[in-house]
Structure formats: structure tokens, C-alpha cells
Length: 229
Image 1: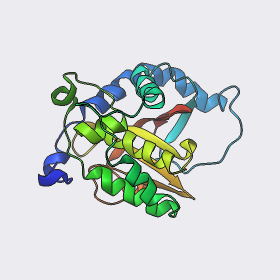
Image 2: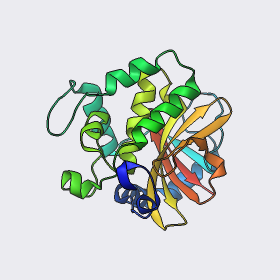
Image 3: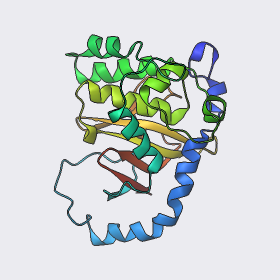
Image 4: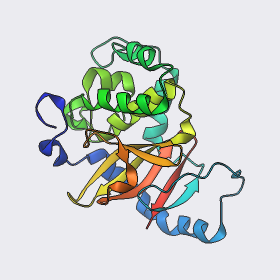
């Protein structure tokens, strides 16, 4: 990240180790889930809104989140934990953000949440938490900053608090083909658009305008999707 916590070239060269590990854990699932593409939707999957493709990929859906214990642990801590004020987390700034943006139109909410979270400093998990892959809650991110998935998670939870449905958002683990590293971003569906909220890009942009991202999988509280070209 550039000086003052703003995204810049220095930040773009930082490998997002957590996202890279997410990608590797899914490779053994690729062949088994490819059958879904041929057989149709998963059993019990109801007809739902049609969403635009993410980075022009094919999506194979699953409701089984057991493959993602770190995701489930983070969601559980976020839902079940009381507001905290300690060396590792803070509520400072959270209520003000939500209150200021309540009642605004969705696009304004998306842009402002992206702007605020992108102002945080990029810090790798090993330096922050002493481990290579830790998924922080938004209160932890507000206190200690974080890496790429922490930006994406905090943006998702802030927008959820503002009333954007969970099904309209996904954290996406991907490969940055320009840099050859793993990365994670947030996608928010706004009407017929898939919008990209990325700590490496200052503004919100349509996802499909970015050609050097290859999605591996996306996830929210309702399920996950394997992405294939």
C-alpha cells in the first residue's frame, strides 16, 4: 500500500497470502464440481434471480460451506461477538459510518464504504496475527487494518448492515494474472451490474472491465461458487 494507507504500486506488488491459500484448497474440488455444469443446478437449489457473471466466468454453485472453516469461524465471531474495545478490535467509526449512509441510495453506499475501507493500511496476517491466514472481523480490521480478504469482508458486512442483501454480495478469491499472486475482492450486484470493490483500485468499477483477474471461487453466508473459464 502506498503512503498514508492509500492503494498504490507498492501495495499491488504485495502477495495476498490468504487468498492464494484459498485458491489452492479448492483445486481438488474442481473435477467433481465440474459435473454440476453438465447435470444442472444442485439438488434443492431454488430458482432465483439471475446474476451477471463475475469476470465472464462460469459458476458452479454449492450450499456446502464446510470446506471453509476460517470463513465460518469469522462469520460466527462476527454474529455472536459483542462489540469490543481492546488491543485487537474496536467499534470506533462503525456506528457513525452506518448512521451516515443509512437512507442513501445503494450506489452511494457502495462507493462510500469502499472509500472508507480502502483508506485502511495493508498489513499481512503474519505481522498482524502471527499466522499466515487469519480472517478478521470488521471490528478487528478497524483496529488493526489487514490484508485483501479483510478489506472485502469488512465492506460486505458494512453494506449488509446498510440493508444490501447477502445474496447480492460475494467475496471472490482470484488470481491476479499481471502479478502472479492470489488476491481477494468484493463483488456487489447493483441491478444488472457486477461492481468490483478492490483495495488495489481507488474507485468502484464494473467487474468485467478488469481483464487480468481470474476468479477461483466466490463465497457469502448462503453458499459458494467455483469459477471456471
